[in-house]
Image (cartoon, rainbow, N blue to C red; front, side):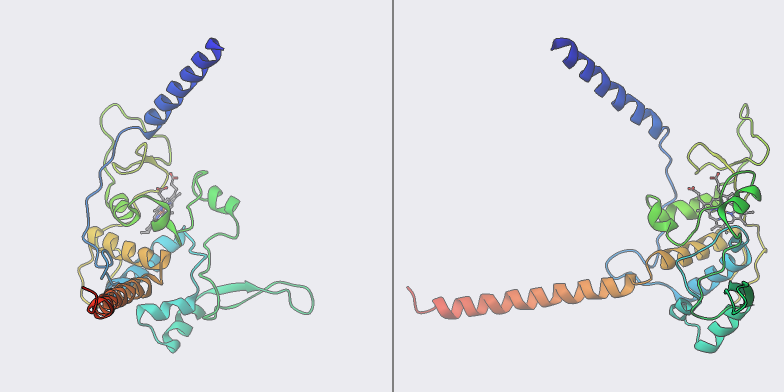
Length: 253
Ligand code: HEC
């Protein structure tokens, strides 16, 4: 009996140790003041459009966003014709046709964002064995997702002395373990914005993260508005109930 308890205690202490160890060093990210934070937070349409441009011109070469349909881009302020044009820039595999063959056709607003690779193995093969993850829900999948992704995109450095990088590895001060299979995707001037916003790595990182935050929770603004309405209703309702209570009890002394 006693040995059992001892063994259990030992196991528990080992679990505690390994998880603390696995957590490794604590990495802090710069705390960005996002317009979509807080109970009244909203997305910035101009930032969303710029972020979509960065995703389209840079990230979509390696990362899919399977949960987003072209028609969802109306939330960024694009009209129907603009969305049709954007979707039609892609060749989507459809089918089978009457003869049983798959065929390519221009994209439609109802299509999902086209993935860069036909399957995961092709994605791994093109990236030294590391699969670029789908970005649809990335902001939700990581703790402090928006701050993390912004930090990651701006966190590339030459490795400190004594650290060896294998072929295809890059040093990022914000990535857990620091050795990441994604090369720094952004460079100053790589994307030219039409609205005159400066094309810097920092700006691209802010904008594309804004876009990814929207993609991960497109209903965020509606959710917050509903929350505020519910609270307003409850405040008014509580006031009303208090008045009724006073009225009913006013004759009791
Ligand atoms: C040349 C291909 C390539 C491009 C372009 C690229 N990535 Fe990646 N990305 C990768 C690969 C490969 C990984 C997997 C890295 C790993 O697990 O070591 C990755 C991983 C990530 C991750 C996950 C990191 C984590 O915590 O696991 C995020 C977020 C990300 N990329 C965002 C972006 C964004 C945003 C862009 C556009 C600005 C972009 N990537 C452009 C190849 C790419």
